[in-house]
Length: 320
Image (cartoon, rainbow, N blue to C red; front, side):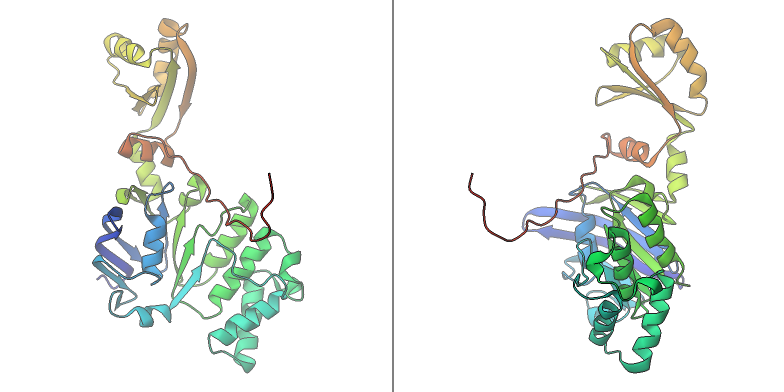
């Protein structure tokens, strides 16, 4: 393992009975960086999170976390981890400071040390002026900051976030990341289904059906698609692709009923295409590549992100 690596995974596999959730997954996470895992539902990112957070045991492969073997030294890893789950883990009836106090007590902290750490985390999360407010009185973004403050209270070397920004607006999401990135030397691993959040990662892994389909810096992944992407909708996209290939020596690909043309100077084709085929083009879109384009190019299908449904509330069942 590289001295600069916080996590190294090689050949990781995991199955629920006969269903494969992860297949030969491997990656390396540099210390002090934000490493993202982007994938649609069923891609395996939740299973990977459970493995890294030691919730489920290793089945296949090898993972080293902060110098410890995940299969043999899970207890040592837990002492250096901070975890933020998608589901809220704060007591809504307690104040912000009370939530930190009880979290610190569970970590074995107390007295002046706990008070000092709580003060530091409240300041870092921008919650000092709200510390006496009950959590139920806070917005969703502020509640998430309370969770981040709790997570950082134990001074972890590595923080795992499982869809932690789900339900947050862009401003609240930026606030959450500002708190995390304000911690010197902290390594962050996060799962997400949000393209804009994934684009902020130092390194990114795209998962689909339990396997890695792309990995690298987000900007480099997007450049690998090409300089520009032109999408054309028509009644017969296959016939349109053939005509453009014959007329302009342009190679396009039909994906889910849309003709896609990728290249460095695709914009120069637009007036020529419209002059020749404008009456058959129903929609035309020209853009720089996105992570959606990377996923589509590597898998042949569009990235469809669906936020997980909240757990049903317990209570009386209504009669129809």
